[in-house]
Image (cartoon, rainbow, N blue to C red; front, top):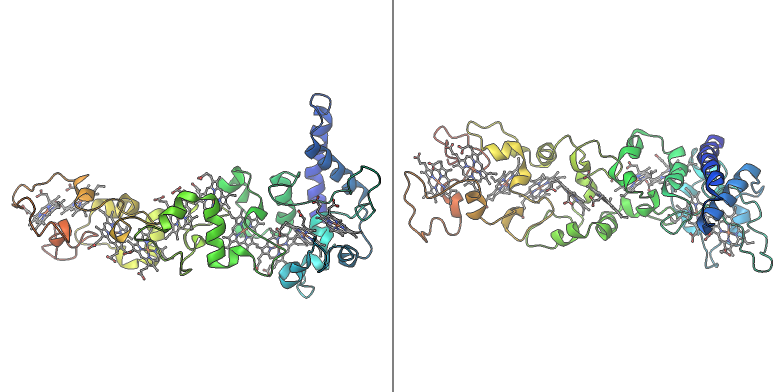
Length: 318
Ligand code: HEC
Ligand code: HEC
Ligand code: HEC
Ligand code: HEC
Ligand code: HEC
Ligand code: HEC
Ligand code: HEC
Ligand code: HEC
Ligand code: HEC
Ligand code: HEC
């Protein structure tokens, strides 16, 4: 625990130094004032002797500032040896109580505590350092170089620690949170064909790792195709006759999130095919409006578009 606070403090201390040196140059920013107040509280380190019991005098079930939900999840579980409840309890995340419990006098505000989320005066990076001080496992190791860290997301823009169930651990809730920001993905999910995400069979984290951007598009696997093969192993090949774009990148033809066309296709055949292939064929005569090109389109004859193992399947047929 002590190192958790120390880490926070060291980050805050740096902030204080830069704050002190810039204080004369800028008009005082109320968010920075709160932050410097929090730094002071940390150096004072006045933790409550009663731990959570002290906080729950005011933040219990009946209060409009209730925090009780935490006792329904792992962070409130005393039996878990590494739970905050076995260190400084509420103050492990919110910092030392200090004078917060004192009734504010006159026009003064109640002394602040560390808060989390977009409205907090504390920067996302510092908020996250609280969480990361315990969550040092490999799953979070690459956080600092992830796209989401780069965009200044806080852990609590996705996670909620005062709820019984963290929304990231429930498929439908996770989809809602992710698509609140990723609106284009959201609209794709509602198109004619899509991966079964809206019904909860799959979730964003079936393919993406929100904590790291080690792979392209923060995918869980090395490449787009490796991701697809994970569940569509039959498309991996190798085939006697390969179709070049298939082995190169499935997303040349498919949108993984959804499409107005059949089978998540980014365009409707024959246009899809004709973007790369000039038809009519040299040797095959397909009259304009031929039924064979309608319906199944080019795939009426080239029915092994992902590659053929038929000895005579050079043109992707069987
Ligand atoms: C005597 C009552 C009282 C006690 C004890 C108390 N609080 Fe508060 N706390 C409040 C009230 C009232 C607010 C509402 C916001 C305000 O008045 O500024 C609040 C606000 C907060 C906030 C939100 C702060 C913000 O800026 O919006 C946090 C976090 C918080 N308390 C955590 C704690 C923790 C952790 C403890 C125990 C270590 C604790 N409180 C003890 C009364 C109390
Ligand atoms: C694991 C870290 C952690 C612990 C432990 C923790 N909190 Fe929180 N608290 C948070 C986060 C993060 C939020 C922001 C909302 C969320 O993510 O659920 C929050 C929000 C709050 C709020 C609402 C503040 C606001 O911004 O309006 C209060 C009040 C609060 N906590 C009090 C407590 C009390 C009392 C305890 C102890 C019983 C406690 N917290 C334990 C992390 C923690
Ligand atoms: C004092 C240490 C501590 C701090 C600080 C802490 N956590 Fe945790 N957290 C834990 C432990 C212990 C677990 C349980 C891990 C396990 O069982 O593998 C856990 C579990 C989780 C889980 C998984 C929950 C689940 O339902 O499985 C999430 C998500 C999480 N923490 C997010 C956060 C966030 C966000 C913060 C900062 C606001 C935070 N934690 C701060 C100790 C901490
Ligand atoms: C963009 C959303 C998002 C952000 C931001 C985020 N997480 Fe997560 N987190 C998730 C998702 C989604 C899961 C569920 C992963 C799964 O199902 O495999 C998760 C799972 C976890 C778990 C449970 C263990 C695991 O890997 O399954 C922990 C612990 C955790 N996150 C901690 C953090 C911490 C600490 C931060 C901030 C540094 C953070 N997360 C930021 C989305 C996010
Ligand atoms: C079946 C695997 C899969 C699932 C499930 C999935 N994605 Fe993706 N996602 C991909 C692949 C592959 C790419 C890169 C190729 C592309 O964009 O066509 C990608 C790209 C992205 C991108 C970056 C490019 C863009 O389109 O803006 C975002 C953002 C994204 N996904 C968000 C999400 C969200 C949010 C969810 C959950 C609603 C989700 N994804 C579910 C596979 C998936
Ligand atoms: C608070 C807003 C927010 C939330 C919530 C959020 N994201 Fe993002 N995400 C962003 C921003 C901003 C970017 C960078 C710009 C972009 O690509 O749209 C990004 C980028 C991405 C990318 C592209 C990364 C890359 O390497 O190109 C993926 C994939 C992604 N997010 C997936 C998710 C998933 C999955 C979730 C839910 C677990 C999620 N996001 C939740 C804001 C958010
Ligand atoms: C986590 C597993 C998973 C991953 C990864 C995955 N898929 Fe799927 N895919 C499914 C499931 C489940 C379905 C639903 C149909 C089924 O049961 O086969 C599906 C269906 C499809 C369909 C048919 C959709 C329709 O409406 O006809 C296409 C096309 C598809 N996936 C392409 C891809 C591509 C391309 C990738 C890589 C970007 C990919 N999938 C990655 C699980 C996955
Ligand atoms: C050249 C374009 C193209 C590429 C590249 C492509 N596909 Fe397809 N895919 C199609 C077409 C066209 C269909 C529809 C077939 C039909 O309706 O007869 C399809 C259908 C599918 C289906 C659903 C029907 C089935 O055969 O199971 C899956 C799953 C699928 N593709 C996965 C993949 C994967 C995985 C990759 C990458 C390894 C990939 N596709 C690359 C064109 C392509
Ligand atoms: C992204 C570009 C691209 C798309 C889209 C595409 N192809 Fe191809 N296709 C290629 C390339 C590259 C080759 C191998 C080089 C060549 O022979 O032209 C190829 C080869 C073929 C061949 C074998 C030709 C031969 O002589 O070996 C057939 C048949 C074929 N494609 C049919 C289709 C059909 C049907 C579709 C639509 C479902 C399609 N292609 C979509 C790029 C594409
Ligand atoms: C009636 C069946 C049939 C239909 C429909 C069809 N093809 Fe073909 N295609 C063939 C045959 C047979 C060959 C082999 C010709 C050869 O070996 O000389 C061929 C060859 C090809 C080739 C190899 C290069 C070439 O021109 O000989 C490509 C590329 C191709 N077709 C693309 C397409 C596309 C794109 C469509 C849809 C617009 C399509 N085909 C529709 C039967 C068909």
